[in-house]
Image (cartoon, rainbow, N blue to C red; front, side):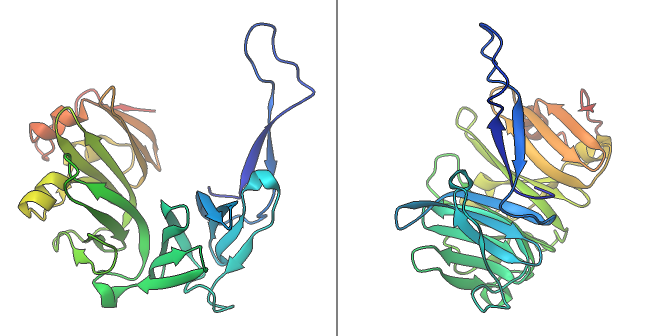
Amino acid sequence: LSSMIVKELTNPNTAPDSGSGDPGTPIVETKYINDKNVRSIGYGFVINGVAMTLAGVIGKGLGIGEDPSYSAEFDFRNQSNNLFPSHVVNDILKLSPTKAFVSTNNGLVDFNLDDLSYKLRSTSHGLNNKKVITCTQVSTSNNDQQGYIAGTEHGINYSPTGERWINVDDTFDNVITCLSRIQNSVGKQSLLFIGTSAGLYFLDIDSFLHDGVRKVNRLTSISNALPSTYINAVAYNTEKDVLYVATDGGLSVIPNIREHIASNNYSNSVKCTNCTNY
């Protein structure tokens, strides 16, 4: 969210079309955080049986409030009130209804909603940079190994527990913008797509965790075909094997991505065919 938290309601004054199933005209109501720097949202948390939502706001830190459907205000925790180690929250990863990994400019925060306590993981814990952009859970295709990948301003880090971290690929030093994991049970393949400020990359999770191959691969042919190499978001359609890439230049659709990777069809010498930019 680039501006503020919004809540979509149905206009009660607009009757649905007969037989069409149209619920009426949506109304987007802006409330709760009137700030233009909402960076991330985490929902589905619980404190003392009450549904809670976390919000990361640049300059304000971590906001905690009841689920917006209950019309509650947000209470912010940051360095100024000594309740949280950063004013900048970049991402929120839900681990359980009472625990989250919060990516901040001062490191990765292990946040516990049971007692509102936190533990800060930074360069002293193995992270290659204290500015953590995003974090995601990963696992092998047969789920025999799991862990976490954190993206920073200088590449990606891995930890099996979130305590100690290692740099995945010492030669990969790009600014991470987003991470998107795909797991294909049919092809027995687990991949992590890595969006950066300089194009699209991927990590073979199976090769990394099973075989110790610490190599991040650049999807050069796809990156060159994109309208911009600054990647904002990546999403994967498992059923159609289609990769959606959002960049500063628009939305691009890349079909047959598994075949593209399986055939090593991502070098600079190979053109990305059938890639569509919108």
